[in-house]
Length: 312
DNA sequence: ATCCAGGACATAC
DNA sequence: GTATGTCATGGA
Image (cartoon, rainbow, N blue to C red; front, side, top):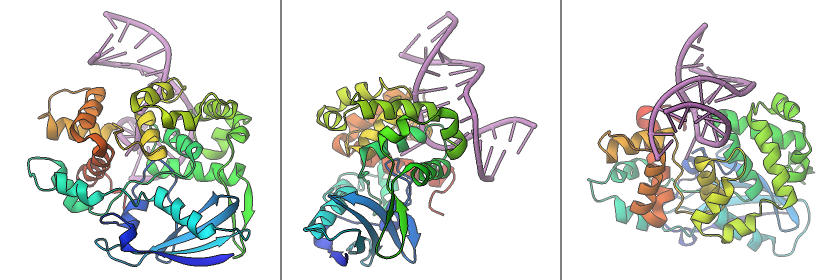
């Protein structure tokens, strides 16, 4: 089954920059593959496996997305299911314009400088919470390039293979039960996960056994969900926040990594000593429901200004 | 070769 | 509560 659908500007709240968004290294899922001007992903949507290729044909201010898709089976209602899938993954309903209105005008707010440079950058939400958890854990003390590669290798080695009608072959993300049975040394040797391999296996066991329940975490308030996540070996405050933000879409979460810590210390606290914990609390209280967006913008601004580019 | 990468953990104080 | 060393791997 093949088709094309167009997501009109009316359906997307505020500016949208597809390329910048997909290539921004958010820890919900590895970066999508790029083919001639578009990006594609393969996911289980309902009962079918769907490969969908997304292109931006409108500009950043009036975004229009063109989506070509192929699915393995003829499924009723696939178009609407795909549309709601895209709406979740790209967070079409986030009123980014309102975020800009709130923080782009006051020059005194460091956020204003980031918005003019990163306009159209948006949060994504991973379609598969387990995958998002693995990605967040794999990113600790690792580079974007390396954790992306390791997770993709993990998918290709251990994920269920699927063949699409367009002749292409792909792998779904592996199940928790599959990863739970792996040997640490093997997982490390084959994916380069390093010491994180044992954490990934232990967490996968917890997911498979129901000791980590994504639906329950989603229901819990932010603080309680974060505390529970941090009981899992290998999950500290930063990874927990990454998962809550990019995996569950809790936009109050503001992951504090080395870049955010540096930038906030410098721009908001005049260079004085501030703990990472306080930086997180500061961002949440200052930006509230926009804390996740503030973090995303500050992070990319900091890396462009002081560090390596992630968009080259 | 040494340092770093979207940190977590144990241990020390 | 904060400070320090350690943890695998690959890239610069």
